[in-house]
Image (cartoon, rainbow, N blue to C red):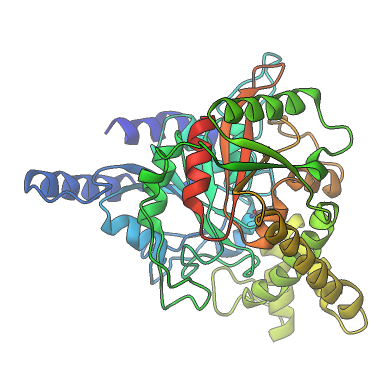
Length: 450
Ligand code: GLN
C-alpha cells in the first residue's frame, strides 16, 4: 500500500508511469502474503516493481511510449515479466520511456517527458536519462524497489547513472527478448535496475535463462549472481581503456574515474592499461546498425495489425496517414536513416561497412579480455541535464552514448554503479564491463565500487 500510495503521490510530477496497475498490485501482493503464510514464498514475493512499457503484459496496455501503440493490449506476456510474476513480484505499473526506446533523455516519449527526482539548485527540471527513464526515476524516487529496463545502446546504464541507482545490461542472450517490443534486435537486451548492486543481482537472476521462444536466447545455466556480489576483487585484473579518455572529458568525470581506480586498487585488484582501438567508431556504427534494424522492425506498425489506425483512401494512404500520425519525430528520423543505409546502392557503403567495423569492436574486447577480467570506465560524459537542453541537434544527444554503445555492439555485460557526484551534487556513475556470460565478475567488481 505504501508503494501504491507513492505512485499516486509522485507520478503526477514525475510522469514515471504511463499506466498504473494498483488493482493488479494488490492482487499479487495478496497472493504473495498467502504464499508467505503457507511457508512457500518465492524469491521476490511481494517486491514492488516498475515494468518498462516495452515489455508486453497480458491484458495490460503496452505502448512502447508511442501513440501508434496507445490502444494496444497484448494477448500474451513477455518471458521476462512472466518469470518475475512467477517469482512473486508485484507490478506497480508500466514505466515511461523514450518512444520505442529511442533516446537518451525520455524526451521522445509520446506520453510526455519523465522528471528525474534529483533536483538542481537553479530549479531546472532534469531528465532522468533514457530510454529506461521512467524505470530509473521510479526506483530513485523510492516508488519501486526495482525495475526492468532494456538496453540497446545504454538505455539501462545511462539513466541509472543520471538517477543515482544501479543497473545492469547482461550479456546478449542472457534474458529472453520474447514479448519485448523490438527496437534493434541484434542489440536489445533486458536487464535490472535497483538501488543496490545486490538488488540488481537478485532481480536479474529471476529474469534470466533460456527460452525456446527467442532464437538468440542462450542455453546456459544462470549462476548465483547474488553470491557473486560478495566475491571481492583480490587478484582481479581491471583494464582501463585509453580510448575512453575522450577529448574534452569533464574534469569531474576524470576525477570520478580515478577514484574508482583507487578504490579497486585498495580492494586488491590489479589495474592494467589497455587499448580498445576501435572505440571511436562505436557511435557511428551504432547509429547505422540500430536505425537499420529499427526501420525493419517498425515496418509492422501499419495500422492494420497493431494499435492505432488512421483511415485513408486506399491501403497505401492508410499506411502513410497512420505512420505519420502515430510516430514521433525521432522515430521517423531513425526509420529514414535506417531505410537509407539499407537501400540498394548504399547498403555496401554504410550498413555492410558498419557490420564489419562492429566485428572489429568485438575483437577489441576479445583481445583485451585475454589480459584482463573486467573494464572500468565512466558511464556517461555528464550528469543529468535539464529538460529542453541538447534538443536542437540530434547528434549532440547521441554523444551521451559514447561510453555505453561499444559494450552493446560487442554483446558483453555492463553495469552502471552510482559512484559520486558532479560539482552541483548530481549523481554520476561508473561502468564495469565484463566478458560474455561473466556477469559474476561484473557484480563482484561493481560491489567493490559501491
Ligand atoms: N540512446 C541510445 C539510442 O537512442 C540507446 C537507446 C537504448 O539503449 N534503447 O538509441
